Image 1 (cartoon, helix red, strand yellow):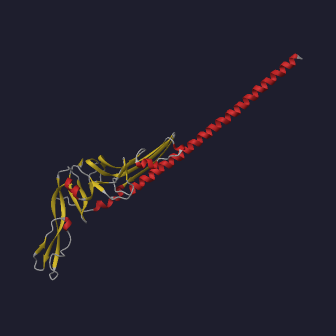
Image 2 (image 1 turned 90 degrees about the vertical axis):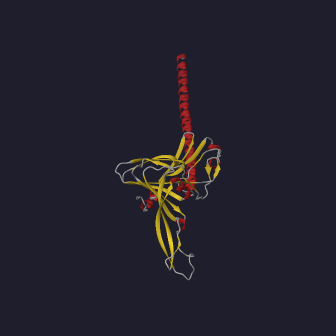
Image 3 (image 1 turned 135 degrees about the vertical axis):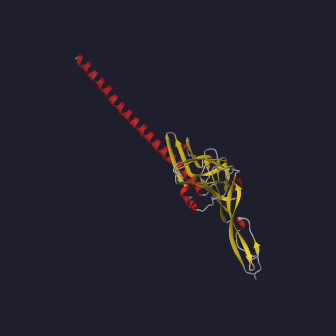
Length: 311
C-alpha cells in the first residue's frame, strides 16, 4: 500500500513539473513573439520617420535648385536654420538625423573629354542669401558670381571659345591651347558705321554695347544708312569674365584620343552634372534620396555658335 502512495506522489510531481515546463515554454514563446513584433513595429516606425524626413529634405533641396541658377550649392544639418526647420520634434523622433547636400560647383576639377565630343562648362555659380550657417534662402533668385582666377590645362592643340552676353549681344573670346587667367586672347566685336546721304561718316561705335542703328545721328530731313562690320580686339580671360554676363566655356575634341582637361580657379565654376543627396537615419533605419542631372543636354545649343578661331 505504501508503494502505491509513493508511486502516485511521484507521478503527480512529474505531471506538475511537466505542466510547469509547458506553461513556461508557452509564456516564453509568447513573450519572444511580443518582443519580436514590438521590435519589428519600432523598425517599421523608424523607417517611416526616416523616409519622411529624407523626402522632406529632398523636396526642400529641389526647391532651392529650382529657384537658383546653375552651380548653386547648399548643405543643411542640425543646428542651423534649415536644419532646425526640418528636424522632427516628437518624442518618437529622438535620435533622428537628417540632412541634404547639393553638389554643383567646384574650384578644381578634371574632365575627361572623349574624341569627337564637346565639353561645356558654365563659368559662374548661382548665388543665394545666407540664412544661417551654411543655409541659403530658398526663394527665387537669379544672381550669379562669375568665376575668377581661371586656369585650364590639358587642351594643347584644341580650339575653344568662351561665349557670353555683352549687353543684348552675344560675344565670344577664342583661342587654341591652355588658358591662363591673364593671357590675352582674341574677341570678334560687332559695330556699325552711319553715313548720311552724301556719304559722310557720322557715327562709328567701337564696342558691342553701342551696336544699334543711326537714329538721332542726323536730322529727320536727312536720309542715312547703316553699315555693319566686325573687328578683332585682344582681351584677357580675367577681364572678359569680369565684364560679361553668363559666360560658358566650350571646347570640341576633334582628335580620336581622349584629353584630361584640368580646371582650377580661385572662385567656383558650375559643374555640368548636379548631384543632390538627402539622407535620414534613426537607429538601425536609414533612407537615401539621390538625384543626378547631366545639364550638358541643356547646353547643346551653344555648340552650334560660330566662333572665330582663325589667325
